[in-house]
Structures are given as C-alpha cells and as structure tokens.
Image (cartoon, rainbow, N blue to C red):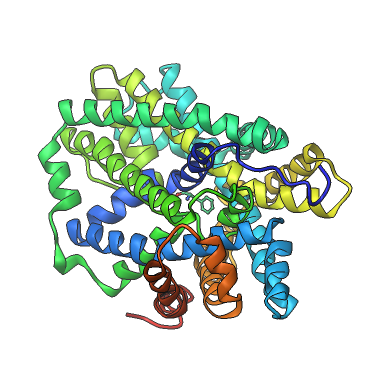
Length: 452
Ligand code: PHE
C-alpha cells in the first residue's frame, strides 16, 4: 500500500486484542512469576502494580497518542509530530531506535520461541513423557548444543510471524489475534484451574503473594520497573505503530488501562499455573530457561494427564510468543512499506528474513559461539543488554519527554479527548516529571552507572 493510505484497526476490540497480544508474551509467563516469587512476593507484586499503573500506563498513553497523531511508521511519525510542534527533526531518532530495537528483540525472541515450539512437539509426541531432573536437563542441553535444531525451529517460528504480518493489518494481524487471544485465555484458565486443583496451591500463593519486605532490594526495585516496561511492550515503537492504526473515536487512556490490567492479570495467572505444580512435585522454582525447560517437563512427566497439560502449556507459550513477535516485526515492515517501493508482502518478508538471519548469532550463542564473548558476554547477551537495558528505557524516557515537553499541548489534548481536564493534567504531570525521573534512574542502574 502506498504511503499515506493507512489501514486502521477495524474496531476497538481488534486494537485491544492486538495490543494485549503484544504485551502478553514470554516475559509474562517465564519471567514475571519467578521474579515476583524470588524478589519479595507480595511486596514485589505491589511495587510492580505501582510501576505498571503509575509509570507504564502514562508512557503507554504517550506512545499510543504519538503514533495516532503521526499516522506513519515510527521514525516518520515521530519526526512529523516534532516538526508540526516546531521542534527539530532529530526527535525522529526515537522512532529509529524503536524500529531497530524491535528488529533486534525479534531476532532473539524467535530463537527462544522456536525452542518453545520444539518443546511443544516433544511433549506431544511423548519424547519427554518420562523425564526425571537429569534427563530433562540433558534434553535441553542436547537441543541447545545443536545449531541446526535451534536455527530450524527459529526458522519455523519466523515463518509464522512473516506469514501473519505479510497479510496486513486486517487480513493478518487482526485475524491472528482474534483467533489466538481467546485460545490463550482458555488455555491459561484451564491450566490455572488444573494446577490449583492437583498442585500445592498454598505453597504457590505463599511464594507469590506473601510480602517479604526483606527481599526487596534496590536491585529488585529496578528489576520490577524494567520488567513492567518490557511486559507492556514500551519504548520499542511497537505501541507507536499500533497507535497509528487506532481509529479516532477510541479512547487511548481507557485502552491503555485495559491493556495494562490484562497484561498484569496474565502474569499473575501464569504464576498460579506454574508454581502449584512445581511445589507439588517437590521442585525448586528456577529462573527463565531453567523453570520452563528443565523444571516443568519433570512435573508434566509425573502428573496425571501430563502430556495434555504439558502440550497445552507449551502451546500457550507459542501463542503468546506469536502475538508478540508480530508486533515486533510490524514497525520495521511498516517502515519499509512506507519508505521503499516494497509491497506489504515484500516488506514483511525482507524484515522477517533479516531478523531471522541476525537471530542465527543468538542461536549460535548456545553452542558454536558460546566462547565468543565480548562486552556483556555472548552475542545473545549483548543484544539482550542493548535492547532491554539501553534502547527500551531510553526509548520510553524520550517518548515521555517528547510528549511532556516538546509536543504542543493542544496536540496531546486533542488525542486524549476522552478524558477530563483534571485527568489530562495528571497525565501531563506524570510524563513531564515522574516518568522521566523514574526512567532515568532505571536507565542508569541498568547501564551499570549507579548501584542501589
Ligand atoms: N511484552 C512482550 C513480552 O512480555 C515482549 C515485547 C516487548 C513485545 C516489546 C513487543 C515489544 O514478552
């Protein structure tokens, strides 16, 4: 489609599904529950809620409003809104950082999502049916040590992402999310009910929710804010590009609150799906890869109906990953479509193949290149650090500063037409003062400049 002829979400619900799909991803299911349990239980959860609603929601409103005002792909939308406000074009760098950051996150997200697909297949076929702790970690070790397996699964996952994005907003993204999000909610609800029924619910509730103030350190505070940001998909141009497709009559502030509430709800429910069975089978909660790929398969192997439950769980992860990865490909695809002679389809294929090729570096970080270390570690460690610790918080910071200080007040007021003057004043106060200070602090802490 030519530049300017912009597709819009066909309804408010389609937009909310897409944005919740972006927000709900691997981060909710394998990162949040462990971080919460280990980082202070109820104390962490409370802090997380404050960060999501106090800092995440105002920044999300800013990002969505910037996108809708700009009506273009991130670099051009940001530059356009800046120049309409009499500000330098250089603000467009925020959009550039976003599309490059999203492209990089997509590259390694696909590798991890590929591993998830392989676990789904192996659970379904019964290959993991009888594993004990040793066999389970051997299985992961074998997969991780094979470059071809990782690259192959990542290719399969990338194909799905490209297929959806190539079909455009209506025919692709909207159709995918309206099919997949209900599946995700049903799977998650089913898993929570089953897990609470057969598992050790009280140990799980205690791990997740009993406030352990003594575990709340400077580090966990920074981690909570970083996780809130990653989980809400902020600072990468994703919400910016999704914002550019929102019809004018949809209330951005109300949508942002719904998205944040759904995202947080899923993160909490994921904890209730995972920990009752972890504790029931006498296992220790572990972090990220360890939790999902080592600990849980052992629990699935022991429980009644484990093949079905395990396959359902990995399917849940794959679905959550697909609805996030399409939102990671969209910014770059929209940009190429707008700025080059590419059709939507070739833009999606080009960006998707590019991210897949870059992802090979992350796949090799598990095996052939595991000794190639520089700056922060392996290629994967570096890409993760660059995006999670630098681009995302800086992107969020500059979006808040831009909407708070650089963009004309009347533009924001016009985008946020559905709220009262008082609510608008509160939002502006948050993006002018509170969010920039908080985001500068996490950026400095993440970059290793300050220590709490
Ligand atoms: N929010 C997604 C998750 O929790 C990841 C993501 C980040 C997706 C940024 C898009 C943009 O897994």
